Length: 310
Ligand SMILES: Nc1ncnc2c1ncn2[C@@H]1O[C@H](COP(=O)(O)OP(=O)(O)O)[C@@H](O)[C@H]1O
Ligand SMILES: [Mg+2]
Image: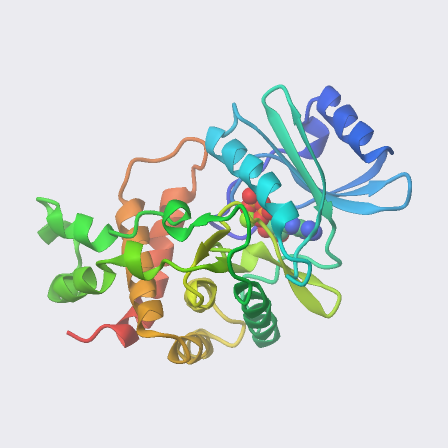
């Protein structure tokens, strides 16, 4: 499992009545389980082989494991049926809610998550996928981006801390006013009517046939057209490229060069969010989250350096 992801429980440990309920919903039985590791939820995920010959992907979580993940899965179950047919995604097969569990079952991809690290062909395929998605406007049932994005005031919140002088490193201290100014107003300039995924990362893109599928749709929203391309650019740097740091940085700056200035502001603001959140109290249901956020803020620095001049 790549570092930073949440350890998942296993499908065979899921309650039997839950598995039976999934089998009833699928009208067949599960005959094979191939566990999937990675992702951000603590519940089991697996590609299930079914007695009728189908393969499906299933992920499950109990509210007791993580109320947040449970709520996100419920939201994803609402979003998936609303996605336009041409958007490359794993279609919802069924979802099951039983006791405090929720299970999402989708088509199984022919491959696995595209990274980390990224490869150029996956960056290109993901660029195409998010372009298809964002060409759709006013998709029914998608919330405004501002309701789905994390709070992006991280630099400002850091700057306001009484111990800011100790918490910020020298590079950040020298540029904190610019970092705050670039982030400001994100609630306005991320708004729009375009369909966006908002969680484009290499663990939420899976290889399928000769392309990719976007998966994990809980954060999907209506927003500015460039949002997912900006997320992609940031993730290529944060997760790395198989060709090395310079290649990752070139890919990201290349993507951002074709986007409005707000996309650069967004990357700066996202980095501030990771940096700020990494210093918050640990989350017991996601024990690696804070370290992951710290690592993302650190690894995004070379990209932010290209976007911020003193
Ligand atoms: N349809 C699918 N087919 C095969 N593997 C998938 C599919 N969807 C997701 N995965 C894999 O399972 C992992 C977890 O799924 P994801 O939907 O991202 O859940 P989480 O909420 O835990 O992040 C992904 O990182 C990916 O590796
Ligand atoms: Mg995921």
